[in-house]
Image 1 (cartoon, chains in turn cyan, red):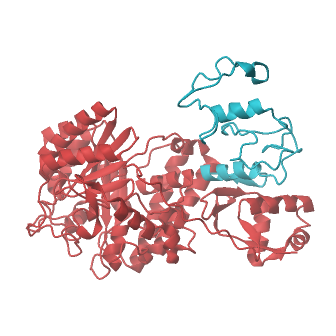
Image 2 (cartoon, rainbow over the protein chains, first blue to last red):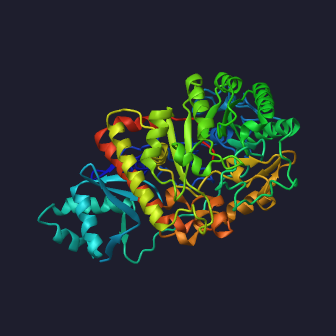
Image 3 (cartoon, rainbow over the protein chains, first blue to last red):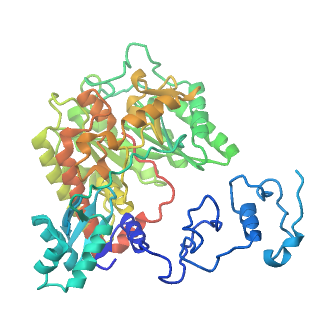
Length: 113
Length: 485
């Protein structure tokens, strides 16, 4: 904001919100992630991603994700029941030997409940 | 091309600058010359962007006007004609909202007979005299109340326990038991309890003062000013004034109890409406750290009720004392006019209230029998009961109350720019005036708007001339209990 000075804390919040508002995010610049934003898995059915041409920040780096990436995100970051052992409750060490999914995905073993 | 028009805000000037207070967001913005000019033009009539740019072309380049319009639109200070404003959604508080303050009415008996009293006077709502309600809270009920408070405080680490009456100190033994028990239980649960009380000061004795000081109990004294004003209404049963009894006791308390600031709470009536004199007496001559004022709660036909001209006079006097406050704040000196400080703190945080206060939500009052009510003023009233300390809060009753008292349903308030801070005003005041807690207090709207405007100006002026002063309102992480009256 150039013409309005935020005086109280609510005005500062309004300004931050207004300054981050843009109609079209993709391709306007580098992806900007607010510092405290939660990790949202790419291509997850819970997230509205406009097709696969761009992610929610307008980034194009994560297109055509390998299936291992999906596994990982559903395993760690998601609260939604998925066909993947969940780290939170049942399989905390499932990916312990898998430092880089692209390389080590064969080390992820089956889990029997 | 669509026309632009003003949206909802209150504009004011302070420190030689233009400001807006946006409603309902409660954001305060300072305008520069361009935004001020845009708002000024749109106040005369609505117009298109190009008309606006043409009218202001001598003063500002066109792109600067476009930029300003975009900013004002995004902040929702202006909008397009025909595009309806999004109504503020009716957001209900989360379920099982934690209790932050419990006000314990340890007795409903009092050794004074203040004529205007809402508990004993002509406008009382609870039958405190005919033996239907216990006169004193038992130790057992006090302990059960403490358990209730800690249970209902949820994940909060800190709970506030405020003792009230009647005259609180008429049941000092139970107050002591409750404090001791609260400390012990809180420690076991890894919590902390902050204690405070309100008293008329008649029963302060050296050992009580010692106890309050040692235990860091926050104390609010109900007192109306110098002798002639105090003795007008705050009298004993035989009609004699209480000033000569309380003044020396208060001085004794202020001398010994220095672990927390002690405040005076003044009830204003049509007959005792000299605010500067009261303030000066209570701070300079008696030594209070802070003084808070509130008009008497009463039905309008009482002699002592403050009516229209009374509110005007009260506002003018509040403004005069507020000017002293501003001067002190600009010089980084303390000033004890707590009404201003409380309001500018809310302005600083940008509070936009769905409810006028925390009653029935984060604050509840407990009667001598252990009935839980909206607040201490309703404690013991069956019509305003939310549960009991033994059986807990009746959540259905509570939700029903919160549904019916939300600002979104107060039609009278929907066009008022002061609603983010006022939200319709005190439930008890409304009940006394109109017989209904959900009614907005329309008899003092002008006064509320006048006072809010005054505090906005003080706040804005401080933001220009001494912004450092306002930083004290940034860091308060813990909720602080307000004095109860």
